[in-house]
Image 1 (cartoon, rainbow, N blue to C red):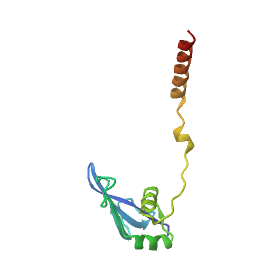
Image 2 (image 1 turned 60 degrees about the vertical axis):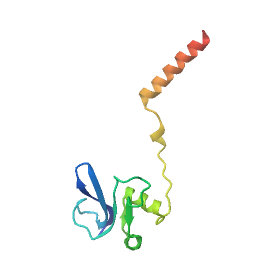
Image 3 (image 1 turned 135 degrees about the vertical axis):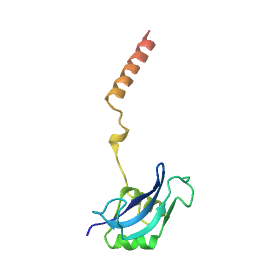
Length: 117
């Protein structure tokens, strides 16, 4: 059985809150889970202590049983110190697109022409 530690959404429209749960990966996002490990409230300020609450001992137990955290949960675990930080690299995200590159080249060309006169 492939296990995941992931977020299960709760709350009403435009007022989300999430439960951090251990579940079988084949179950629906908000469906059946094995254990609730904590909560995440994105409506609170980023520096608020109540934004993320986790039972670290149980999270460590599930990780030792082979559960894989999702990307968002992994970042929360890294922030809490329960997991070592992983190096993330997406070099293409900072590269401008074709139109932006063309605009920049045209702007540089106009600036160069203005300086030459």
